[in-house]
Length: 308
Length: 308
Image (cartoon, rainbow over all chains, first blue to last red; front, side, top):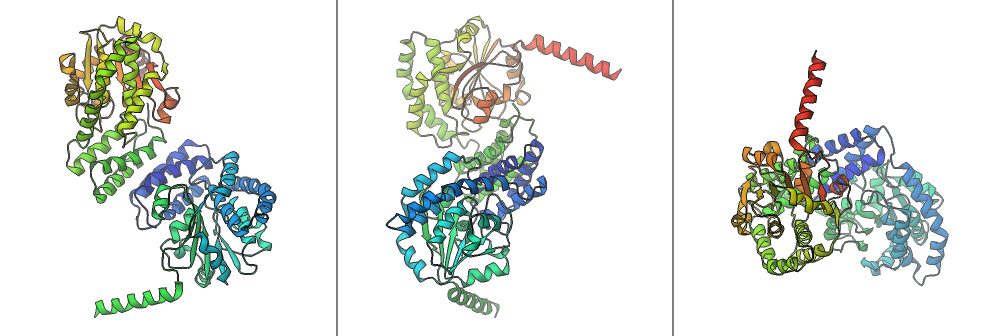
C-alpha cells in the first residue's frame, strides 16, 4: 500500500506523540516535529506509510539517545496480557471452535498499537479483549482453517508487544513443528522484538527469527537474508497488524492478514469498515515463487523487446 | 495566543481539507500539502495560529486561481440561517432575557467553522442551533449586559458567513447607533466579508467596515488604519469565534470573546472545557490606552536605565 495524502497529517501527529512519549523536553518535541515536517514535505509517496514511521522513530532514538523509548510500556503490556492468559486459554479450550476463538483473541490484541492510540489504558485493553471475543470477523475466516491444515511451513509475523501473548494462544492452535515466528529486528514503537517473544514463552514452542529491520511493518528490501529466505519458502504467512498489511498488501505471497482496522485509510484500502476485525487472504496473487518468476520472465522479455 | 505544537498536525489536516474543498485535482492537493509542510517546518511559533491559516489559504487561492473558493458554501449557509431567522427572532422576543437568548444563538452559530469541520451538514447546523438555545454559557455572562449598557462605541468583530445572520439577531439587541460591524478584508475560509454582512441586511442597521486583512482572525498589525482606529476608540469589542480569540487574547483592550470552544488547545488556553459556549471578558488588562501608555512609558524608562 502506498502512502495516501491522508497519512501525512497522521505522521505529524504521531511524531509529536512519540516525542512526548519519549521525554518531557519541549525543545526536543519541537525539533522532532519540525524534522518530520521537512521529511514529509519531500517524501516519496510510493513508499508504504511504515517507511516514514521507521525514519521518524530512528530520529527520535538519535535525538533522545534512548535505544528503546517504548521498553517500559512494552513490558507493561506484556505483564497485563500475561495475567489474562490462564482465563483466555480456558475460554479457547472450552470453545466449540478453538482455532476461531484464538484468532479472535489474537486480533483483539492488535488494539495495543501505540502508533494509533498513544495512551491506551488498562481498562481500554480489557474492554477491547472482551469485545474482541464476540466481534464478528470479516474477510475469509471460513477458508483459514483449511489453509492452516494444508500448510507445511507457516511463518508468523508478530506485531506488538503485549499482543504477542495473544499470538501465543493462536500459535498453540497451529500444527506443532510447522511454525516460525518472526519479530522486528530492533526496537520500533511498541512492536514486539525477540525479548517480547521470549517473555511470552515462545522460544520453547517455535523457532524465533528477527527480520533485521527496524520498520514498523515488513519492508522486504530492508529485511535480512534469513528472513527473506523463510518468507519465500513459507506456504502460509500470518501477518499480524496494520503495519504488516501496509507493507505487504501488494506482495505476491501466501499471506493472511489478521488485524483490527484502526485507520480509515487502511480500512478503505482493505475494503473493510473502520474498526473491523479482519482475517483476510492476500488480494495479491497468492502463488509466490512460480508467479513471481513468470512475472519477472515476462518483464524481462518485454524489456528485451523494447530495447531491440 | 501563540501557536502550540498541537496546532501543527491540525494545520496539515486543514490544508489538505481546504485543497480538497477547492477542487478535485489530486496533484493540487499534494502540492498545497507539501507547501504547508515546508512552511510549518520553518514556522515562527510565537505567531498566533491564524497567521498560518492566512498563508495556507493565500497559497490555495494562488494555486487554484479561484479568488474565493468558499463563496458557494458561504452563500449556502447564509440562505440556511436566513430561513430560520423569523422563528429564532420570535424566540428571542418571547424570552424573559432577550439579550441572553440572542447571545446564545450568536454563539451557537459559531459552529459554522469550516476550518474545524469541513463538511458541516444542514442537519448538524440545525441541531447545533437548537442545542445552543439551551446550552449553559460559561465565562462572565452575568457582567455582559452591564458592559453593553455602559458602552458608547461598540465594535462587533464578525466571524463566519451564515453565523453572521445570528450576529444580526444579537446586534438587534444592542443599543441603536452605537455599533460598528467589522468583517474580514478579503475572502478567507468561510469567514464573513462585506458581501455576507450586506446579505444579512446589516448595512441598513450599522456601519460596516472591513479590517483590510485576509487572516482568519484579527491580526492587528495586518489590519488597515481605519479598523485600528475604531479598535483603539471602542469601549466594548465583541469578538466572535475562535480565530478572533486566538489573535486577540493577549491584546489589552475591552474585549468580550463569544465563541464555541471547538478545539482542545483553545479551550484549554481559555480555561474552558471542550465544546463550551463561552462569553468571556478579556483576561488581558481591559483598560487599553491608559494602561498601554503607562506600560510603554515603564518600558522606555527601563530601556533608558539599562542603556545608561
